[in-house]
Image (tube, rainbow over the protein chains, first blue to last red):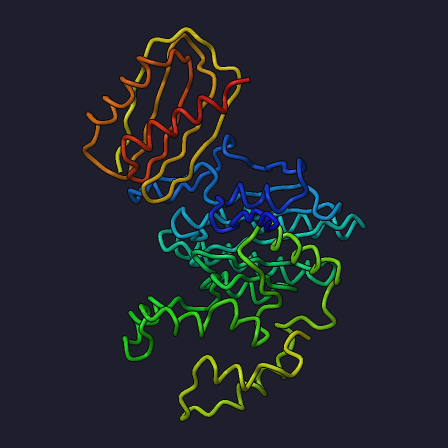
Length: 283
Length: 97
């Protein structure tokens, strides 16, 4: 007789709305600015792109480990999770409200579920502006309550939203998740296949995959692609409280790390892990 | 991108609204709400131009089998007729009390 295997619910197979629901304590999910508010992007239809009624971002309130929380979930299937004026404003606005709550002594646990290629190209500067507002809001909020980012996959997290992940207090990743400023296809397109072969999955994941990011201290927790595992890691991050010094505030440390890399020596994923892994990667 | 409108006579009111699906490649989202009158009103925004006749056939068949005074909005990203029919059925199921 073998014990029945625990049934795993793959986080990556869920839509943004389902992810937010699954992450929050059972029965507490409550959506703000939901689909029937029809807060869609005004910029897509004139460019011949079908909009989504929520502009690809779900703002959900509920409880997380019994504490009040707000989950901002990007829908990676809609326009590659690209952040536009409206979807960006939903995220920034929710973070700003969370800051106001924290200032009034009612902290809300903010979680970002990041499946995004970054800026939505059709919305250009408006998207960039929205992402800048998200960055500012994370920095303002994180000294009062940890801001936790989750990069589960399958899109990954790139561009300006990778910077947003870098600003988070804690980042939770799966092996399938990828986190990087430029996505592999963009690098290949701009710098050539000799720079990076985006079809080489091993190389891509060795460079920007969840396991590498956690091993080199760019992300904090590596978990299975499983709802319970991700929810558990997010709760642990909040229970830890804000880090003594946020990763993105450790400028001297990262300058020293970068100075230790010779521009003439070709560096690969395992090589970086030798350089950066080990010594107190976690903090 | 193309916008299409369809109307069907209907008598059965919808008890609550429903939202299903995602505007992702090969999929669609459906927003279903009570209709203000004794008709079903459907607005389709689709990324694939030139499929008006197919949409008409899919919706004709659906409303021949479902008497539903609903206002329905569809945001479509190139879903097949089978996927459209399944998402419509899912929306109807979610709108049941």
